[in-house]
Amino acid sequence: MGIIGKYRPCSFAIFTEAGLKMGTAEEYIENVKKHASPDEVDHEVQQTMMLINAIVDVAEDGKIYTYFQIPENIPQDVIDKEIAAGRAKLAPVDGYMCVDKPFDWKEEDGVYKYDTRQTREVLGEQLSSWDDLKFDGKTITMSSGLAVYEKIED
Image 1: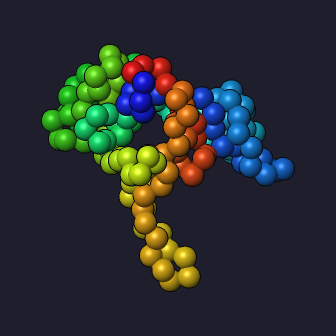
Image 2: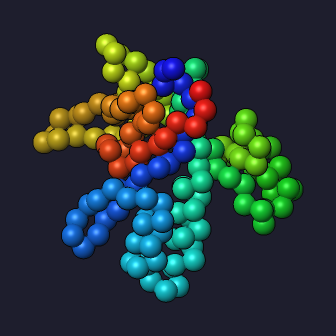
């Protein structure tokens, strides 16, 4: 059982008055409701629910795909137009689609890494865009530890 497989978010970084902590999806949503302005709450909760229901697929082809659940209120013709325009593709999971460019991943000297596609530097020195993709046999940790995903399928 290796890193290849499908994962669901199980723990999120939550920024609170006391600092950063890891929490559940429910805690994350409560924090969004608490800190978003009243006219932003519905949109922020909707965006958060998309992330919470996402599936991350670490695939054999060296890519990490993120699949989002297709909202029920999206007409099929809109979905078809997005797919035809190349801005989305149906996922191999019923009711999900992939709208983001996949991340590259690799194993290097026994360490899993993924390309964040971020340009980074410290004191004028360019840093690699590759971050560790921590895998403990059941979960992967990405985004410098800000998101943990639990394996749901090999």
